Image: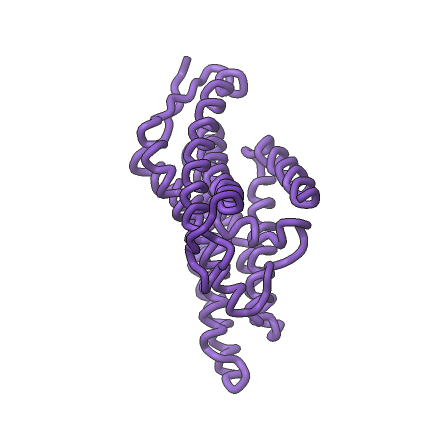
Length: 283
């Protein structure tokens, strides 16, 4: 528990630094690094890194995606995707006796999902501005991580009925409910605090939060985070590993912390485009 707490404090400190420089390329570099580490961990666990060409191509693709956010760079993205697919298929043709097509498909899928999912935080910054971008990114992270925390403690104290015994034996129905409740309370408190400090952080602006939408969307976002968590558990169980890595003592690897985030950040981005959680008003 002590290691878990120390790792959490260290991780939150880094997050605070990144958010402080949210409007700079530091965010792109941070997302690129997390994407790269996440792809490395999940492909290593799945045994997809034996071929150096596949490994280098996948890592390069994952690291580049967070920088393809401007209109000029977006024009190059289809070219990059084409090259990625071409290399994977060429390797499959050359090594078809030792590399199965399922591995190629897994590499392609995960190398797309992880960086594109995390890069939606950059899309929110670039399309909505710094204030709303920080709010929505923090909202997504709070939703996912507090659902994890709530599920852990609720399951520990009250868990009885197994949620998915063949996938993750320790997860319970009571834990899932507790995670959704804690996540909902957390994002409401987060929104209250953020709206209160907005005039001080961003002079001349105030944040108007749509609390009914926050309350309605919070349980769905918590459920999305749990789906991401359980999907990652399937990958670990099928490959007989407990954690994706050990870079964060008490937490595991990068993917052990961001598996629940992968479905939440894009969901918040999509929601913000149709039913905004908040709006920025001039004082």
